[in-house]
Image (cartoon, rainbow, N blue to C red; front, side, top):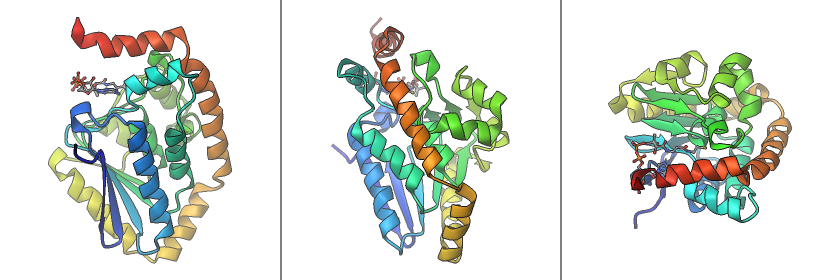
Length: 251
Ligand code: COA
């Protein structure tokens, strides 16, 4: 079995790639752990000045593995420790984060982008957070960050109504910096990562800290959302939605 997350360092840029294309890069616990470890480790390595998060051509990330959600629901509903570790890693990360998005970015596939500093999307990319339709609530502090980023109305449409954004709409909403053809996404994202990495590192660090402000409110919101998520995961609404998704091809 190939590695589900690959980590490659090229000079000052670390690429963390989700590599489960046959499942559209739906994230498993092991994948969250591997991604968290790669981001945490980059923060300890001064030679690494930017982390690039990437997926596969057909999918950036289809969100949390829905089979895992169903399993968690039967085990008390808590978001697993690897998920929390990944969310904390995103929130506390000091290394600039760039993302290269092709195809689907769903659930955490979209909300992780709210922690990134520069997002390049292919014109085939689409972003959605069908939390409420799945009986759930938003996570990754998206309930705090999205309204700040795109305003209450657009955030409600995305996070609560579950309306997807096309790449150009995501750019207008402030979630995406640049839209390019799908085959140019990786190159463009690497170009941005190298550009950031070439800047004076202490200046980048200090500016990023100033712009992001306190991490405490982000971490507090991640925990508040996780407490509600735990309740919602065990709801009849959520179980029914997960089962419908997992059974859909068998009918
Ligand atoms: N969890 C578990 N498996 C998933 C998954 C997820 N989040 N997303 C996709 N997969 C699996 C599918 O079950 C399918 O597996 P199979 O080939 O063994 O049947 C495989 O990945 C390919 O997905 P498929 O739905 O056939 O591809 P598609 O191109 O028609 O659609 C998506 C792609 C991403 C739009 C669709 O898979 C989807 O909506 N996924 C669920 C997204 C979601 O709701 N995530 C949770 C957010 S909180």
